[in-house]
Image (cartoon, rainbow, N blue to C red; front, side):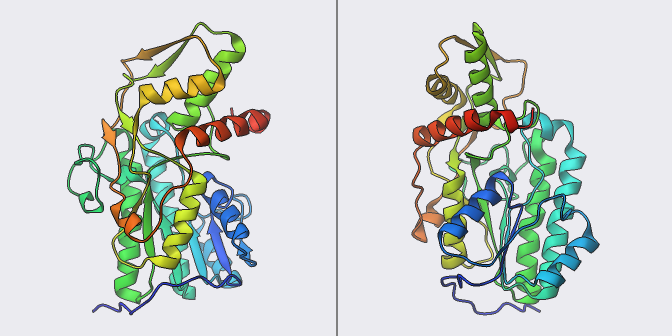
Length: 324
């Protein structure tokens, strides 16, 4: 029997106790900045050393002590193609643990509003482009990150199950490829864009004659600045309610080759770019249909070139402190 309640989304109370899970990560830190800028006065965050979200007993104790009223679930184990393909069991297990623990504890204390943030990798490898929310579970996943995708799909279904069983107006959002300040620029664990920024910047500094990227450069990807996804996250919490997840993106894409050319130009690298076609390309194209998000009144504000320039500046300012 469904326990679904009628709920009309509205502006969140700026004094409400808001827990941002993963507040030091790429997405979580952007959400934290956005909430602070919007006047929220009772934000709650814990680093992974302070609270291991894989530790079920510790998570339940935290929720019982803090009693958050609103939760942004941005915590996750994330990585690029190499990391996902090398450690699929870790990506599946750890993300399931994080999601189950946080959501189960949130149910126990009656969290009234929760946003689960997933990833566009939930969609089939050959989904029709642009990808609508309805494409979920309609085809085989990309093999290089299927374990991570399954974990995120489970998160969507958990939100839907909580809505049906407990009547809590929780929602899910699936962002496209994200980038910006606070990204993971490590050589083995980063996504395509931060990996490129590091690669081209190091080539510029060393005077390398060429940079080699994985694949053919042909696949097309959509990129969204983290400050935009933070804006969209708050907007959805205040403007959307529904069991179906919402795509979050720009609705436009570029080829990996075009991205490489843009990064090289912005960092000032003048050497050659080569492509290692023995390495996997991943999904041929991944462009989200964002008409549902736009229908709620939200649009991105940061153009790719502008976002790339600010991200390169941030990388240069923080490179000494980043993971290698």
